[in-house]
Length: 613
Image (cartoon, rainbow, N blue to C red; front, side, top):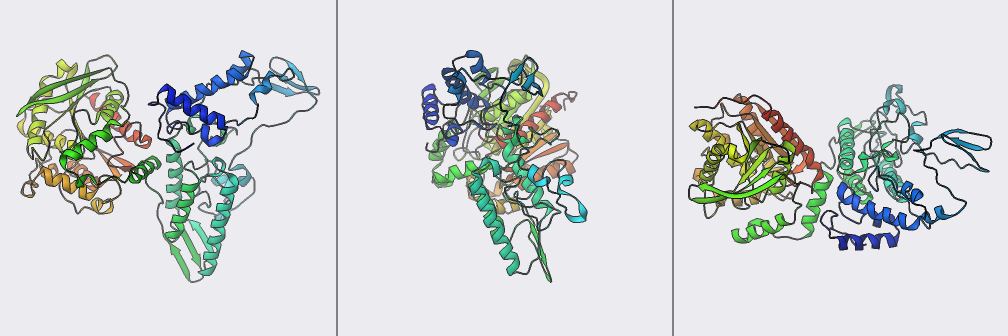
């Protein structure tokens, strides 16, 4: 089956059935696990495949009760090792075969004649014991390995295994593992993985010998980073939701954690090669008169973010800044239309509000719960050039449901046709309009937060300062997601993240050149970091680790805090500027959005602040 980009939640019934039947006919593991690109991460997509498998089982097994017992309902398909069969299910139609469901009828004891369950005695000539095994760690800790200071590996791993690359562990110098926890191991072709580990270890020993090193050991920082990497990769899948031996659940008392690295052998091999090419990154090497320690963390980008960037790079798309504004907008709109819509909300209302130079569009989202609700006035991203009141709809829907709040996403005039300060004037008008219509929206008087993403975060920060200065609107809080706070393109994050993460330094410079002339860039209405920050409302700033705008957002958080403003900074580790709002595409960014929604709920549950006059 060729690589697919078909998601289960968007596929038609005909496409879903065709892909499933092709995979079923092949009867191979990777095909049935890859019917949809999102079946290992999206429960709804997984359920489509699982239900079609249950249909096949019911077709093959004559007895309906036996068929239902063979159709598991309590875990997603693929989170336990699937059964690849040749007439396996047809075996249950034989007269001499009976299925006993041990969850309903557990074994009580072995007897001289066979075994006894909670309901009956069963007689056998032979009993084959197939009761599971202590996967990935059992064989290692069963040997009494001792590391530094006499600590045994069993004791060190009492709370769960911790390794670097599944090859070594801190405190046990010169101790190599083959397909240990934290490597692809049981989720791969074991022969291939064993050979890769043996080759790596042999090459490592040869390197140590050539350079007179007698000891190698991972650094605590590198090991902690790899443990986090393994857990983060697993967290975007459905695997941790099931009590399986992948999680150690078949061994009483064993800590529950995903043991293998799930990103695949090819990616894992590339990581191991990268470690070597980076002078054994994350390892401390010692020998007589020689020592080397290149401490660090390998592969800090989240796995799904990496996959998204690779997919985008493979398309060979032109840089956005090489297009005309009209073509850039068409490109942006086409890309936005391909994204999942986000969660269902209670109601969607589209309308217009009065702007300073004519009507502007808005989209209002109401939660599915009973109102009234607090209100969030939202400004969309797009470099002051792209987007509309609906372009960030998946993020707005996500916030609406998670925070149980009304989201009013407003449009504003765009550069270059309407340069600075047109967007600021529109944002100011939107705030006054929203504050005047809270109750009409079904909102709670005095419960208003301004929010924005990217350029929209810039506008949100600006109107907060403006509202404080004018004293005409009371704002409960400001939510700034990857905001533009100034035009300092020399920050470290601009240098380190200049290329490769979709939002580039050159693209931000292009946006800025079209929006605001250089002589206006010190105006606090364009660069809120340069404004007076005292007496602003409580603020949450979310930043992405691999974002040119990262350091600006951090600087704004620090400046607000220094001015006495309550601030919470949420860091999207392993995330990019564009990955944070990608609802149902980048699963690893969901915890950041959950933190944002939690902050909004906490804010809305505090007493209403007095209106400033």
